[in-house]
Image (tube, rainbow, N blue to C red):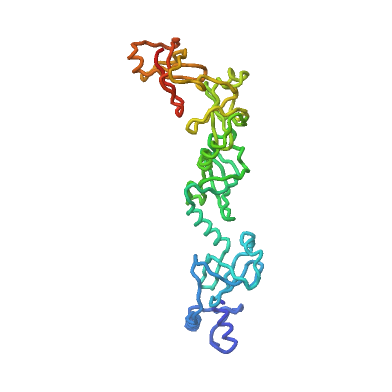
Length: 365
């Protein structure tokens, strides 16, 4: 209740008859000693006001056109919560007399006006819980639109929606061939940071997808046909993304004949089918042709004809077949007093096979 209203009540019973009032019943001169006396008297009656940021349990009284009104014994005014959709959704099942927790947003001590919010309370709790997420925990976002720098997203946590942004470089395991393909999609991401200047969460989908890789690799099956999307090509093969988070390479020798000599025409975004050929330390080797190569059967001591591909300071790279290569180390070349040149045909002997790193060590036969 305003001081003016209180004075008006007292005036009707003959108290402070000498105070001047305006036509609408308010005190004309707030600097008068009568007003100041009454103001101090009114504030000394033990009536209290909450603090901004305080959470108050209060009793629902009624709803007006503009506010939901909540009562707390001893307060000078109701706690008023805006009657709007963002608040109303929390009051659907609230009956008169029920209690609810309200976050105090504003306290006007001059007019004894208390502003509160339930939506802001839940938002505050959700923000606190977002900060306490453990390493590896994800949240859900919906991609709303595409900008030159990335994606505007809505982050949804504990039923609360927050604004967010995802840079282009963090949108997938690989660069997206068509950035617009994920607009409208909903998926998991991890929070990178919170931008105070923009008031948005910066999120990372790539980091979340990386957490899926170990389990996704365990589920791969040999002999099963997989579908994937080309992310890029080189002169020696094609890179393919599949199963949401995995990337593998199809060597040129393992691409179907009608495309193996036209590899430059296989563009990012092409749909492609393949088999799993081999998995080496999370490196996935794919093939479109189910066949054996030297690598599949090679053994220590085996004699294999090869062609020198290149001579490096550390040794000579030897082509054994279209997709298998071995190394004759410099020490072996010097020990055997040999000279090698690119394109030279030689007979080699297998010294060792490191299957975990897909390496073959050779010497001269």
